[in-house]
Every structure is written in C-alpha cells, then in structure tokens.
Image (tube, rainbow, N blue to C red):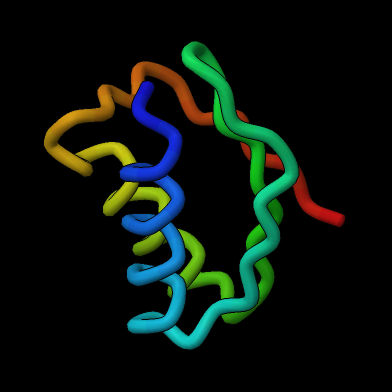
Amino acid sequence: MVCDSFIEFAQHRARRLDLDIEMEACDAMTARLAVKGQVDLVDAFEMACSLGPYDCIILDIERSDI
C-alpha cells in the first residue's frame, strides 16, 4: 500500500461525501481509519475504497459501529 496515495484518496472521498475521517494507522500492509457520517454515505465511502486508488489494492474491509 502506498500510504500517501491512500490517505489523499480517502480524505478526498470523505470530503466529497461530507464524512468525518480520522486516519489511525497506515503502513505497507494496512490502513486503519475511523469514518463518521450518514450510514448510506459511509457505505459509498467503503465502495470507493474498494475500487481505488489505482496504486493501492484494498483486499478486505472490516467495519464496526461505534
């Protein structure tokens, strides 16, 4: 995973979807973040992350409600 690319991608998508995002960790194998907002928009954010960015492959998404 290219952390700078993923972080920029995630922050951009979160802004577009009017979501609050907090990056908790990012390294070559894992990105961990907290996303808050309307449930349907969080779903859209999850879908966006599974499709991009082009230089980061997201193989698995784990989701939990707070």
